[in-house]
Structure formats: C-alpha cells, structure tokens
Image 1 (cartoon, one colour):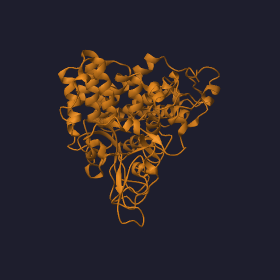
Image 2: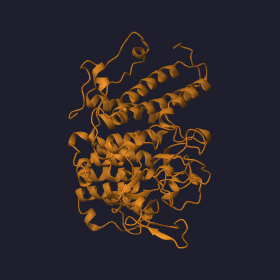
Image 3: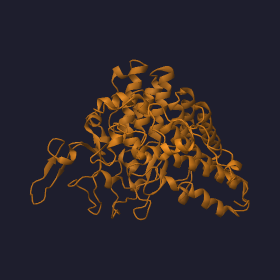
Image 4: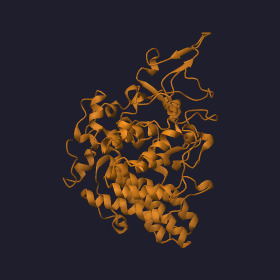
Length: 461
C-alpha cells in the first residue's frame, strides 16, 4: 500500500469507520442471527434457548472440532486484528491534524483490543502479528504459534489502556457509536474480571464512574428506540429500521398471538429464555416486563381473551419471551431501529460490586452498588441478609443479579465461566454432554493442518 494512500482526514475517517463493519449488519458480531459472537455467547449460557434446531449443538453442548459455527470466528478475528494493525500504521503516515490522527489511531487500537478479547474469550490465545512490516511483505507467509497466555493478555491490556488514554469521553451527533474512553475501559474491566485481577478491575470501574454515565429511571427504556443515546449506554451499535443495519431482536423472539401495537413486525419466534432461568426473578421485579412469562391474547374468531402461560401455550413451553428491545413503531419488516446496547453502566456497577467483594467481602459500598440496580426495578432494600453474610454468599448473589439484569446481552457465558459454574449449570439444564474443556471452543481444523503442527488445538478436542 503506498505511503500516501490516505491523503487527508476524510480518507482516514472513512477507513476508520470501516473497522466497525464486522460488528454491524446481518451476520455481524452483534447480530441476532445464529452463529454470531452475541448469539453463541447467549446460547451456550442458561439465559437463552432455541425453539428450533438451527444451533442446538451449542445450546446442548454437543459441538466438536468440526462444528463450523463455533470454529469459524478464530480466523476471522485474527484477520481483523491484522487489518487494524495495518490501518494504525497507515493513519500514522496520513497528513492531518495530529490530535485527530491520534484519536483515530486510538479508535482502531480499541477495536483491535476488542477483537483480541473475543479471541481470548472464545479460544484462549492466538498467534497475531502486531508488526505492520511483516504483514506488508507478500512473500512472507506468517504462521505463528499461539502466544503464551500472559503475553496475549498483555497485548489486549496494552491496546485498551493506550486507547482509553487518548479517546474522548463521548461523541455527539453522527459520530455516536464510535469507540470512546468508556468503551475501552468497559472491555478492559471484563478482561481484568476474567483474569480475576480484582484490584485492577475495581480501579477501571471507578474510572468509568467518573465519566458521567447514569442509570435510566426505567429498565425497558434503556433499550427503547425513543430513548437511544441515553446516559446508561457506554457503547451501542447504531441501527436503522431500513437498510442493512437493522436490529432483528424482536423478530427473532416474538411468537404468534403476542400483542404488539405494530402489526407489521415479522415474527420468527426462534429464541426463548428457559423457565429455570426465568424463575430466578422475584415477584414485583420490573425486568419481568421485558421477560414475558405470560400474556393475554385474543385467539382468531374468539370474543374473549385467553391467558397464555407455560402450561397452555405452545410457544411458551420452552421458556419466556426475552423482549430485550421494545417494539419500534416504524419497523416494517424484520429490522427495527433500536440501537444494540453492548456495554452499559449497570453492568459496570455490578462488576465494581463483584471486584470489591472479592477483595474485601460484602462491604456497604459493594452492597450499595447492587442496591442501585435493584431499586431501579422496584426491589429496594430487598437483598436478603443471607446473601451478605460473607464473600461467597454475596458472590453468588451478584452472579444471579447479573443474570437478571443482563439477560441475553451476551455476558452470561463469561460470568458463569468466571464463577466456575458454566459446566455445572449446563448439567443442571440437562446437558450432561458438557465437559470441563468446553469453557473454550475448538480451533478450526484447516488452521491446524496449514500450520503443520505449529498451532495446537485446545485440550479436549
């Protein structure tokens, strides 16, 4: 690529915007279709199930090293890391305002850190090239061994810390949806939690608390199309009800007969939330207005409404309806305009409570952060004394509260793994095929073959 490929800031901006492409649209990382990062994370956990067989290999823990749905992301994310590395180098050589240049570089560096975090989350470590000169050599066929764990974690940490130091606290107008300081910190906090670096996680969460985020008055409003860009959202994928970047969540979950004001919304009824998870909620929890366990509807030709429950309605037999995103009145097909909320402030409050508890037990401060979450959903002063009797009890309670607060947002699999309950929870769901090594997915076989033994498969596969 010529040194003068990007001639000005407009060229640079277009190239940086393209780094978000894999996160958007149909089949993107955060899309609601099966086989995406978001849906694999949901289906492998206990807060989402399938009503059809598209991806039951994941839901039922019967995947193996030849299951393309779980192996294919490894190669894609390595390519995204390489593209980010090259783009950062191109940006450094582009004539433009230096401050804006460094913000663009930081934006791409944050994306690179997130892609590497995805790799770490699903597969463990990987072999990634961080030297643009090596990537630019067409005669250099690079096959790297997977990095040692500490080295790979250090790379992720470096990218996120360096980008957080440069990125602005927020963007306005058409730039909403670009990575900010809060985004970088939010990903970094998740890395520290998985590594059980509790003090580091605590400090990063406290940095996020300084950035002006706040809980919304109502839970459902966080995800409503009318309340986009609200102060609880740290980062979201912008969506339109028309075009390729729509949000298909409502279409994926809503069953026939469910009463919607907008009758043009398509109904595929693919996903549900298992009853075992639903029953973790307390009576009076306002989040149950977004996780529907029963509803009244008027059958065709009837004059009286009927109460649909898990016992008498076919589409509720497997679980409740996770209506994470309220309906978009302008939706005319499968695509809604609700922005996809990826990182938000309530998540950080619960992470901070967990990090404090792991170091010092259930302190009043840690309890207070969980209390903020529960007060918002109509459960003030309702944490039982048994839950705050000690560190382990409060840890279990926080895990449950994270499930109730963040259901179907893609965090539950990681949370269960961190608490060493991923496999035991699968067994409780009846999936006895779940084995301890399945906390990681397998690498694709073609990558192993091409490496001629240089790259090793994850143990167990």
